Length: 153
Image 1: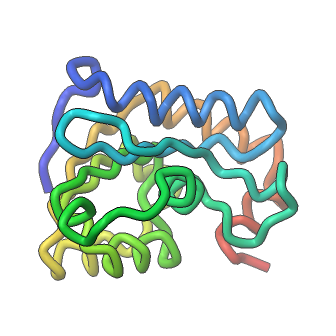
Image 2: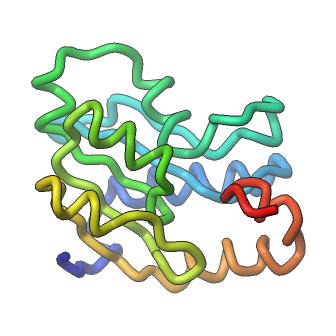
């Protein structure tokens, strides 16, 4: 697993802007974007609250907004996400063969990163402090909603 500086990557900001937008809408502040050949194919944010959805996590909203592409596009794409992907989102990453995932932070929540790595997914950790603060303040203010989002009773 690699670490890199978030300030040098413009696509990271797309995902983080989505997280902030979700927060402003009253949702859970997690954002994502899918990039192929230096072009954003799709962007999204956790919209479970806004849409009354059980599956619209940031990564899945991003993939839905990107639309359909041939498998070769997903295999060469990079998914940027502000939080370590959960099991559901990790399943989508594996299913579509996305080979590179840039993760904003995994302090507030760590999904099955080992499974992704074991399946040849390159994980790049940014450990972005602003991203960590945004989600931790949300969790502190909304523990019940957060537990619902990650499947805790």
